[in-house]
Amino acid sequence: MKALSVREVTFRHEGSETFSLDRASLDVEKGEFVTILGANGSGKSTLCMLCNGLIPHAISGELSGSVEVFGRDTKTLTVSELATKVGIVFQEPESQLFCMSVEEEVAFGPENLAIPREEIRERVDWALDLVGMQGFGERSPFSLSGGQKQRVAIAAALSMRPEMLVLDEPAYALDPVGRVGLYSVLRDLKEKLGMTVLLAERDPEEAIAFTDRMVLMKDGRIVDSGPPRNMLRNPAMLESVGVPPPQLSELASLLSARFPKAGFDFITVEEAEQAITKSVLQQGKGGRT
Amino acid sequence: MIPGIPADKPQDRIISVRNLKYTYEGGVEALRCINLDVRQGESLAIVGGNGSGKTTLAKNFNGLLRPTSGSVTVAGRPAAAQTVAELAKVVGYAFQNPDHQLFCSSVEEEIRFGPRNLGYPDDEVASKAEHAMDIMDLQRLRSRPPLSLRLGDRRRISIASVIAMDPRVLILDEPTTGLDASETKALMSIIQKLNDAGRTIILITHDMRIVSEYSDRVVVMAEGIVLLDSDVSGAFSDLALLRRGNLEPPPVTQLAHRLSGLGVPRDVISPQELVLRLSMLRGGDG
Image (cartoon, rainbow over all chains, first blue to last red):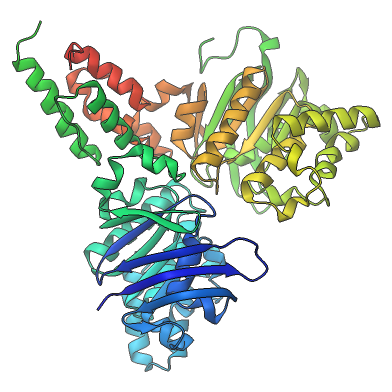
């Protein structure tokens, strides 16, 4: 069974002249970490809102095609059923936080599912621990930094024990420190929990290391998809959909053009160091003067 | 000019800050003894994490905030002796969130507001607004309501409304936040042109890639002090210091540091530059 199956979905927001999604199809396997990349207005957010049923349950418009999460059509699921399947985190954590304390914030979801007190306690501790916010339970969410707020928003989504997590540009409003903390939580979701994740981003740089598959979107359509290594090999393709190519893929393609015999195919700083060191050393052994 | 050292001629300095301290009501010490010169015509980046004091510093440049102690000199006169309106003619400030600045019913009205408010006669208000709309590529949107437009457009409007007052210094607070790659490129190339035409640019950001591509000089702030004041390549050669300022250098610079044993300089900031350096090392035969 697939975690997510989007089939030929077209969507137009009520009152809008243009279609946010145009016959978009996408499958996500259980345990897969998928990063959607696209410029502003490419349809990433609309796709995110389809996954947890915000569209069509809360946001109206003209919708065709089908969306299934874990084998069930989102139209036939209730909002509370959907909430236990797919958690969602938005760009601005403030839009999601409203309780007096971090603990209440994270407990809010499971309390609404009438889960026993003891289990809620366990879930809150577990979720706060996972996002590195243990010890902050008593604090007001509004006294926290942007990065901490966003991690609380993730904990609040996780405490519902969803089978899948959707994050729509979660680092949007964060400074470099906040970003580092956030992406290390996302890495843990992948490596420690093996969670199914759909992440929407404008810039591929930070998600490269733990993404299984990158999906490129433009004008409401899915234009390409594949493992990061394949997708990043083609900086021109990224540029054509308004996504900035990572510096290292630009470097790899420049080096490959300059030194066609060497063949450079790296996506991380570590790989680049190895490949370049090896090539320069080989050159040394070749005995050229 | 040597970065990090005060310019020789005082007339080159458009803004001078001496022993500046700023404490917010409630006791938060945002700036702790800042000394800094901004030179006429340069493109300066002020970088640092949230809470480092970069925005507080910039707001002291144009009188939006007044020093708790120390002095700010703008265009040769103490800022303390100048009104906010006088300062606005020299130092313009475009806020991070454009919506904090936009309130008129059309783009054109929005952009006319500043020069009109400064007391310019009608014909001059009109010509300054036209000029600002030309520069920021807003002519086709001139009668649209600003708040109905996309973020990239709203950002250009907020910058245009500052440019219409024709300040010699333009402060841009996180101008690329929320913009995608092509919007960022379009905006930064306009800003580059403004700088080429002689306008002093102060860019507040935490995006080191933007800094490496567009700024001449960088001031790194952390906890209310200036950690480093240097030309851009100098700033990128000290990883430990950047990290103290909660900043991460671009991947190519991180790679250059790891390759320094092969003879690659540590201050490489672009892929093109690194390829050039490696070609020199390899003898460039392919």
